[in-house]
Amino acid sequence: MTNPTQPLRHHHKHCDDIFATAEAQAHAGEWAGCETASAKFIAEMEAHFATEEQVLFPAFETATGMSGGPVAVMRMEHAQMRDLMAQMVVALKARDRNAYGGAADTLLILMQQHNVKEENILYPMCDSSLAATVLDIGGALGERLEGRCQT
Image 1 (cartoon, helix red, strand yellow):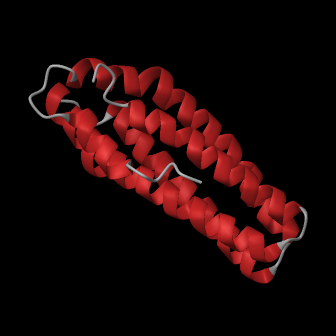
Image 2 (image 1 turned 120 degrees about the vertical axis):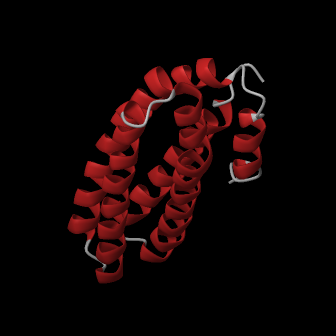
């Protein structure tokens, strides 16, 4: 695989689609549908974060010798997104459309900025650094996300 991070790029789009569904359901006050979509979205985001944090980032750090830099920023942003998702869950339980929308709007902006940085900066660095490794990092990433991008 020439771009080991391709499964992660594809999974970004999948998460975005589920997020849009959850947001639309909340906006319409369709709380049962919003609960289902939000739970699926959060599960997919956690799978995505875990794949990066447990597979990609350590492999990149080992290959490059970098222990801070872009990976540290991505980890920090993951923590911020987790906090916003938790706020959405609280708002969802309270059926508070404004609180849900506020957290969701902030999360959307953060996700968009985060994904641009990953797809345009970090992932190309990873693809370049990891292409020559013995470890099939692309296969490992794909296996962790395999079957998840089905709606």
